[in-house]
Amino acid sequence: MSLVVVQTETANVGSVVNMLRRLGGDPVVSGDPSTIASAGKLLLPGVGAFDAGMASLQGSGLVEAVRLRVREGVPILGICLGMQLLFDSSDEGTATGLGLIPGVVRRLPVDSPVGPVRIPHMGWSRLEHCRPHGLTEGIGEEARYYFVHSYAAIPEHDGDIIGISTHGTRFVSAVARENVLGVQFHPEKSHRYGKALLGNFLRGS
Image (cartoon, rainbow, N blue to C red):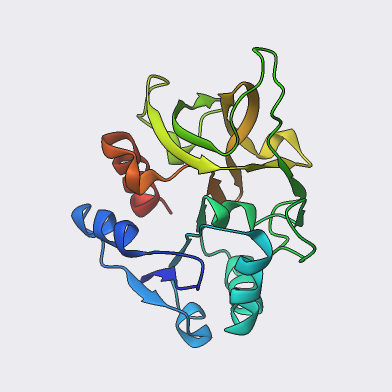
């Protein structure tokens, strides 16, 4: 079964697909529910607003297709907005998320312990590992990843958090709940560290 990159109107999948191919993967890009239904792994990229992301999935009939395949045990990795869509809801809009990880998405605070910070958070930040996980295996905490976002997830259960980053205030930047994985940064734009992380996802079960 193939790795399917979920095609939505809120994602530019080209750079993700190119990185996966450099890693030896053979991804299929599709917004067809029947293709999702036969996927061996799913990757959900996304940029932009939460409601627009969910509307795109709803309009293509993908919400239930993705939920069903994930509940059957197929791994999914959400990237940036794709990670946020894994949760129940967002301050950014009124849409209901995929609900694959309990929790909500909140706007990053401008005020922080080190003073005001610029939102959106754009640039490179480290990932502090909260617990060992196959997604980050072999990647040290010196690794830096590229972020572009104004919102971040707050999981209901701390055990779902595998990585924390800091932009003035600490925020959740990587999550894992059984076969549901998410990263707030863009691994496809994060050079060798992002390549290593996507390689772990490709090789993982």
